[in-house]
Amino acid sequence: MIKKSLSLLLVLSLMAASFVGCGGDDDKGEITKNDRGNKVFKAFFAVAGQDMTKDNRCQRAIEDKIGATCDVTWLAGQDPNEAVGQIISTEEYPDFIDGATQQLIEANALEPIDEHWDDCPNIKKYFPESEWEKLRQEDGHIYIIPQFDNFYKEDSATQVNGEAFWIQNKVLKWANYPEVETLDEYFDLIERYIKENPTDKYGNKHIGYECLSDGDKYFCLENAPFFLDGYPNDGCCIIDPKKIEAIDYNTTPTAKKYFNKLNEEFHKGIIDPEVFTLKYDKYLEKISQGVVLGMCDQHWDFEQAEITLKGDKKFECQYVPLDVTIEKGIKPQYYNNPAISANNGLGICKASKDLKGAFKFVDDLLSPEIMKLRFWGQEGTDYLVKEEDGKKVYYRDDKMRENYNNQQYRNENLCQYQYFPFYRGLCLDDSGNAYSPEDQPQEFYDSLSPEMKDILDHYKGGVKKITDLVEKPEPNTTWFPMWSYTNGWTNDTDYGKVKVKMDEIKHKKLPEVVKADSFESSWDEYMNEYKEKVDSKCYLDALTKEAKRRDELAKKFK
Image 1 (cartoon, rainbow, N blue to C red):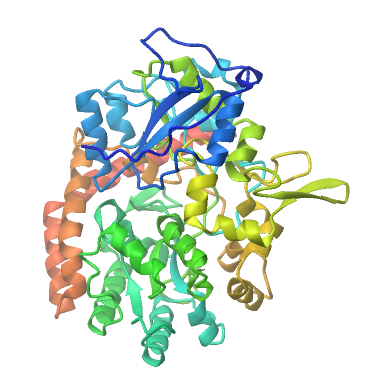
Image 2 (image 1 turned 90 degrees about the horizontal axis):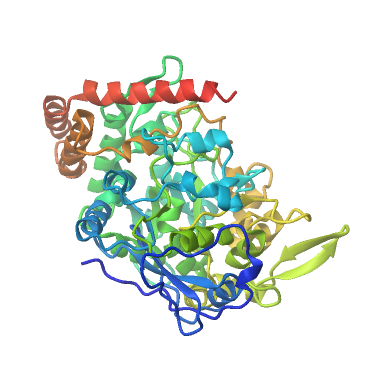
């Protein structure tokens, strides 16, 4: 069964009538309300998450404003597809869901977004027409709202949220702030540091390099080759930008060099010996202890552990992104411009007893007033306002920043509703404030620890944002990101079956390759099985066809 993480039972309603546009009740049975007379929706998100307490302060404030709240259930140890599959088989649908979108669409479980957005202005304007069109299914409808990286007017990101080879800032300081450009230089730095510093200042043994390979987190191990070759995160392949043709990154010369390097580092004792038995929660636990010097991962995937590090004041253990390549002279493309995922996002279930109310809830969460409550909190408690050049500028004092870095405080007081749609960028109001403190450049810099400010001060002539430490992104290609296509594949297609077989072989053979006493023979054995059992042509032809389709679609909106 799906484990219920009660992230609320929330709170008091006033002034619901002040939010107009999306509204009304459907006659599908009794609508759930709490003892304050406010609507209570339910959501299931097929990812790990943090539960808010039932008396969460900002969640209560949001409920007061819009007359509704939402109980959220997070994934608890299951495979996301299996968890959603169970919901489909039992037909016990929540009001909102995110995960295994294609399964849900095929089960006719999701309500078309486009049939309601004329009554929901905040939803309709969330994307321009060209972006909404990327989400339209073969039946002509749109069923999901992608939640992430939707920057309003200006990309103001201050933190690298995607993939990098990360390293603790204390290692860079110890080495006198070196430029680390290649995979060899990265591991050489870790080797030298751990030789002189086998333990941390608390006496705990350092782990040189960690590599998550648990379930759907397997990308941390297997997708580095295309980054090392200077390609962006298309996830499932490399796309030749001149021919618009898919290339299999699993069999490139760089893939062999990368796994050979991991094999060497494993036998040197730099890589955690528990690396291939490590579950996600244990991985986060090790990072939060401050003993892991480096890893390849996406920042959002270990951000929770870094919040713990900051809460424990282990600021020297915070991580810095390094966009290394396989050799010098290759321009890295780890950091990309925002792009929507065409196959992942928030869906609203047809089974909801209050479809109009559910759409209204999402619409209200996108209003500027509620966006401010979601990400800044309450004025005077979570942030302050000062006058600068005739503008009202939001900022926080040290105590407010300390509270934000305390996970328990956040669970009890802050409510981002982070798997519901939200904006990023610098246009929350007429004064140019960002939608969140993290994207407010001066507030972000002021909130950094002295250790992280020290890193920013020593690189590239002194910078103010973590994003300034890595190569600036190239304009997105018309097909980017391709992983948003393969995420929707099922076993009903030949290429979907090929992907399943490909993943099975990699899950089985790559740990063997990294641990093998003879890398060459193990790699050859892996490649022979891969080429024998994986129909790469079927897989790559499907990706090429989709990349070209997206390219043609983009031309219609130029």
